[in-house]
Image 1: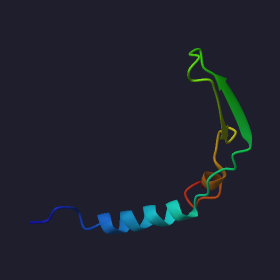
Image 2: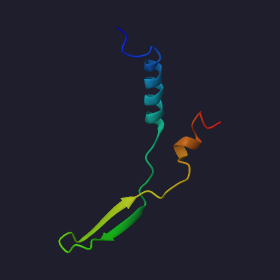
Image 3: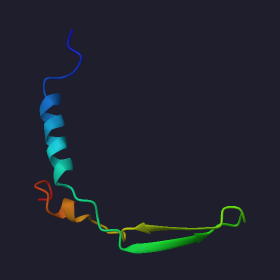
Image 4: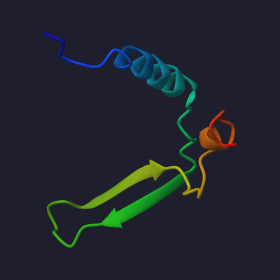
Length: 64
């Protein structure tokens, strides 16, 4: 009994290749959140600036 299509292997290989080429953006911004609950205090975290089109997508073979 066949559990998946014959082309799933090709699709999985293409996905793995694309994921290997995508780079995480640099986290250059910092946010600080003050909790309204005294026991939680202040938290800060770093994040990447939003971008309408990630660089990995602009350079992909599927972008035209």
